[in-house]
Image 1: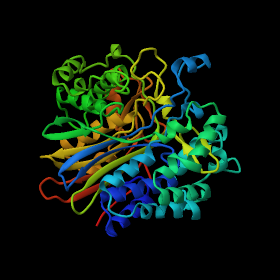
Image 2: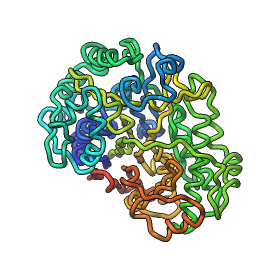
Image 3: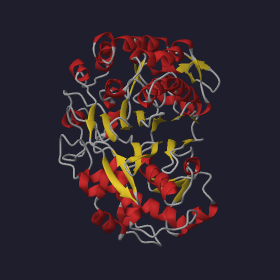
Length: 509
């Protein structure tokens, strides 16, 4: 079974499975297709994280595919250039893209099919064109101005100065040629040679700190997942510099609060208050562990979670919790399970919609803006520094039952992902919803001082949150997205769910 945010990616991945490939081959193929047909969310110029389970060795694994800042940069230099916070777009927001090396590592360690074969659908869509889907078109239109102001982005992603509309055909011939280079030459064809030269020259013209050596040295690496026992299920996340621990802390706080009925306003009050506390701890403590000591164990410590839970007033929102720094962004996530029990969730991102809006013109590569995830707070674990990885929002998800995969999932939406993971898991574990029901349920997110809710949130929940002192506002767009597969622990059968907030599809055979 495959679940992705676009039918073309799901279909391509399923074809890989039907052609003798395994879950890891299928996930890479889907990631490549999404890099073309969902250009606002992911691409060769982005980062990637992986949580997987290899049935051959019967254990999970994790890959951190986030790139570093350039060695020539520093927070002092940014301040000297007049920045008092990290730039949100442009070349100064770019870090070295780690996605291609992540896919290469996953294939080298776990793949079955030929590397080049996995590129064929993406190359075809880039060269011959693909039909712009509805949600992709909405995002495209929403960020038309950013593309116009970007460097090279308008040449690739605007037609007559306007965003592509749903039903129109979009082609990327330069990207197709780049995909062909990587298909034949492997990861080195991206990080060295003409492709790398185009990236470095583009960034150099725009004042970036990144140099050729930074790009050539970019490497994904294995990490040990962090985990939490949530009511008999082992919830796995990646450690810092990933924000995955935030979801574990949030779930641990919820374990120490009274359980309510599913549609009770109290439930959403507890969820939002627990999220504010979990995000506060994230903002205080998480960053690149190569630069500062990260107390990872605190995020799964029962005593600490109980202490935070005791701070929550069941009847009123607590203002002294402060304002967590939350942002929205775009991401895409892929979940795959194959016939022999391999399972993987792979998540790719450019961070904001269309990333930095900087396109390397000869190669068609749109570069991420992950550098904007740093801060310029002196001495902070996530302060910008040379050759450093920023705090990352993108979180693959894997839940085990009795040591075997039960839920393979991802939730999209920038900072929303931590609360999104917690809500999805609680819906399945606490309330017994099937995976599609859990994905479909209305969402809430604490954003810029507001309890933001989707339009589908029932009126009695909105009224109940307001009565408890929350400033409630309705989100302009759907909140986040999710792709997930549930493996029934008793029967072993698969149930797939794909978020109606996106264009996607869950499909299996």
